[in-house]
Length: 338
Image 1 (cartoon, rainbow, N blue to C red):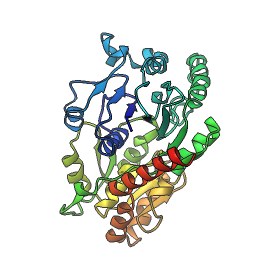
Image 2 (cartoon, rainbow, N blue to C red; image 1 turned 180 degrees about the vertical axis):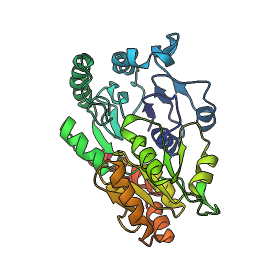
Image 3 (cartoon, one colour; image 1 turned 30 degrees about the vertical axis):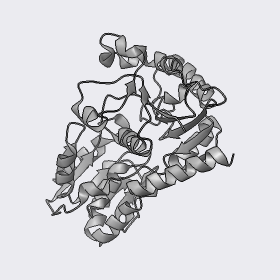
């Protein structure tokens, strides 16, 4: 069976790109089709070395990396230009428009959807965009149209599954993303008496809540953004009192990475946190997105006995082996029993 992988864009190394790398291990001969590729990103070059990567016409636009918002309406059109006539199966891995690809009846299209586009459906923490809402409305309608091109949806979480059903009126099966447990082997942990927030500083992440809470209580806060290496991330997490996730996550791989080191998580109790954290056992969930609610969670953590081994056991349930095995079995069942 000839397989093609489709990904939104290769410009940074994040959770969706980790999943893509995992899919490359399952389908080692599958080429990657993507809108644009940042050839200067050393992490991407390392992780996808030797892979055949095909980009769209957007790659040839001078300064495309600085024109993302202006080019946004063109991205779905770019994906439509790919030809998959010689493939039996196309797997799109997406939070945006990779699912816009067009396949003929003989080629199956399975979409691994982490979430419908956050910026379109107001999952990103950004409200009404004023005049830009006219464009967003058109893109939302188009997003629903292209979702109908997908033969089968696989959701990255129960949270994503609910969004897919509500927005696209499509059923899906859940296969969770994975934690690379080998990254945490033989790592010595310690209590450095600081808290950590991890990820890209997108508005929906609500880093401001963690910053305010730590400032008010005099606690140290370390911010891990996309500029840190995997080794540096592990080193910092190894010494934290807890990871803080104050935003509503689609799923929350970083929460599981902290737990893989036996560290608890203080998280806003909505979205993916409900699937990755056991309240009172591997972390503390708080119900309101505010510094005050987070401060109360910090105080509760001080009087709650968190078992590091239980944290690790919870993370192990989301291993790469579980992802690979589950994904292959589900793809087989979708292709050969439907």
